[in-house]
Image 1: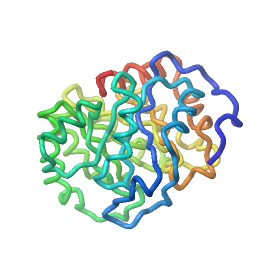
Image 2 (image 1 turned 60 degrees about the vertical axis):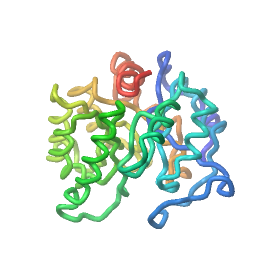
Image 3 (image 1 turned 30 degrees about the vertical axis):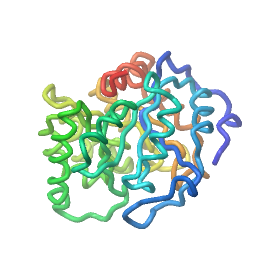
Image 4 (image 1 turned 135 degrees about the vertical axis):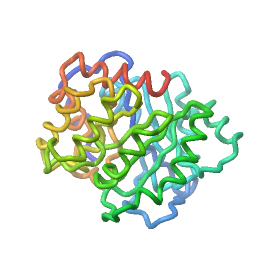
Length: 290
């Protein structure tokens, strides 16, 4: 993994109470065994909490949203233990749970700061037309559970699946977030129909949706990811109140090729100071209840 301190200081100063709304921690596999129901699509690193907090301090980040990695499946122990160490004043979490998980388990997680459930498919999943229909029973059941406890749904999937899901997302009665700008590929530009449809959904007053500026390397072209800028700027111009930012640390499958400071600096290129305050402070505070 590239050394963030060797990259130098960030290009802009994070405002007070800035939030990293999407990152992962990994512990010793002897203590936290992997529990993915599918073959792992990446080699899990050891990325313990102190390493992440060192990065956060370097970037000026003061609030943290842990996201359950797919490698652990529905075993959220590593993440929840890290949340206990940080404390609810400074962190929130997004878990992966079975849709029929007992109420008592959700209540325990809520007390630690969990505020969402992840619905996660590989961002390179091959297209299967109509696949979103197979997801509906789980989405609707989790929607009901989240509505009862005041949580939201967090989605990751390829752009074609995001596009298929947009009518369902627009109908949700709970907030939702979409990782990696919905995973619409930057090479296809901001005019691609799925991305424009996403913007229209996020504009709606009756929909509480958020796009995440995360994992730029997953949807844009290295080394500089310059093709992501038109898409990011289109979102900033259209829906600045519906964007949150996350480091996606430790950059699974890409850690050797990208720098955490480099990725943070992209936000300085995409948004002015007022918009960055919304993206880093105001919007995550609203969604996660800081």
